[in-house]
Amino acid sequence: MRTRLITTLTAAAGLLMMVSVPLLAHHGNAEFNTEKTVSVKGVVTEWFWANPHCFLKFDEQTETGEVRHWVVETSNPPDMINNGWNKYSLKPGDQVTVTMHQVKDTKKPIGRVVRVAFADGKVLGTGGGGNTVSGTSKSEGYDKQ
Image (cartoon, rainbow, N blue to C red; front, side, top):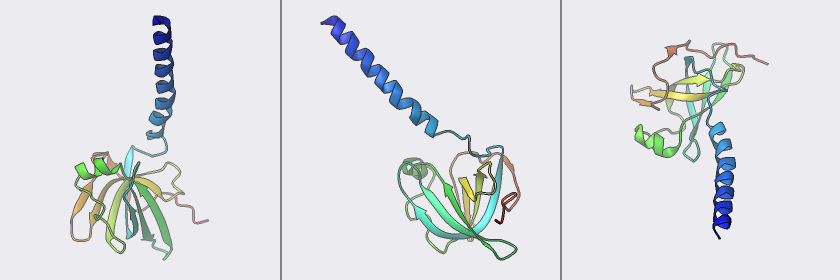
């Protein structure tokens, strides 16, 4: 009986470890350049309030008149609520300046939000990385192809 209990507990612990390791890997920062922030002005096109991450889509008008479609992630809704956000924080048409950690492949308009500033001066932060060295106001090295 005791051997059976130990075997069952060992199997359960092993299963738990196998499941939890990929979950930890999912929450890495490897794809983002966390050494600096980039700020981009744009217009909100969509705000997704969902687990496991909320997403903001917005369009940037470049100096050449091109529209660049950005997708940036935030944390999960409970973390966002703790930072003053809610599912009605953003709506299509809102003018915003998004400060983010852009992905390392700067040809891609993708990032992780650090803060969002609205045209009226309101600012929403994420509590993650606001003390990094600021970058430029445009994405770096964006390939127009």
